[in-house]
Image 1 (cartoon, helix red, strand yellow):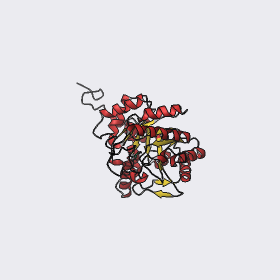
Image 2 (tube, helix red, strand yellow):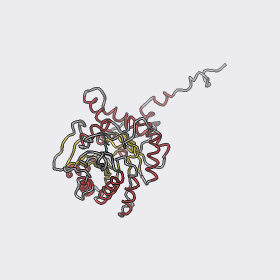
Image 3 (cartoon, helix red, strand yellow):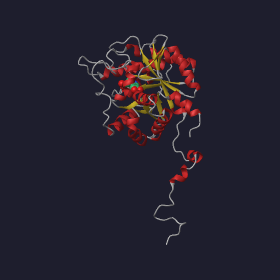
Image 4 (cartoon, helix red, strand yellow):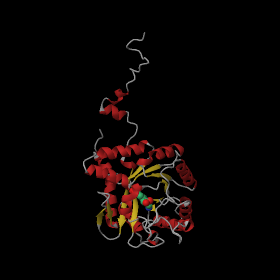
Length: 336
Ligand code: PBG
């Protein structure tokens, strides 16, 4: 006969709820935490001197170079250590020549941000889609397919010009085969051996990029990106992409989008434990929560914090998110 005080097979002594009884105990046993240092804030930089709100991303703005520098400073005051720059040039052409221009929009913004707040880590998005008149991420042949060799030459040039203008990290996002190796070689040949590459190693062909394409004027004029971005159905292929990028010298890996791909975040974390891993909480994910919050259907702070925590729990070290500043403010208050 078992007494009331000894463990028994009915499991009545197993009470996980004991560790949930008070806020203090819950905090003591919390496994995952979100810190302000985990956040990377995206900035859209445009020509001119204004500030324009992006209609499909309420609370997110395109800003001039000067406004972007002021904004990076404000973010730094909130404790945000890194920004990722996306440029919206006035002039677009078939080869995306403004992407490597010395006075290109991202190059100017990188210089001004580093001058205004040298401690902010400036990450430059290295891709052509915002700079080409056709909106594709590479140089096109007459039949509209991407010419990989000439695209890699251009991407290498873009990365070097971003490093020259003071970017601390380059982040190739075009999913071009061989992009990390080509950029690594060009950076090294130009004396930028110390500049890390944050590779968008695993980027899916996702409809969640919709609002970003409005924001950055980067929607393809024809066709889509399924010939280079990954099929949402595939996960083994994600491991192959990440392995190839590591072999070519990637210093960070990224999974994008985040919410529908948390299994991929977890697999990358487990398979490649030695590299920092970034999850990109993309524009459509931002827009969804914003819209529901604005309609009064969801508690914004709660769902944003829960989503970002989920990305960290899945294994991300860093999260690129348009919510970065509001999260930084929320983190300054205690979390229940
Ligand atoms: C391409 C790029 C895209 C995003 C970041 N870099 C768009 C695309 O691939 O179509 C999307 C980011 C987002 O949706 O927040 N340079």
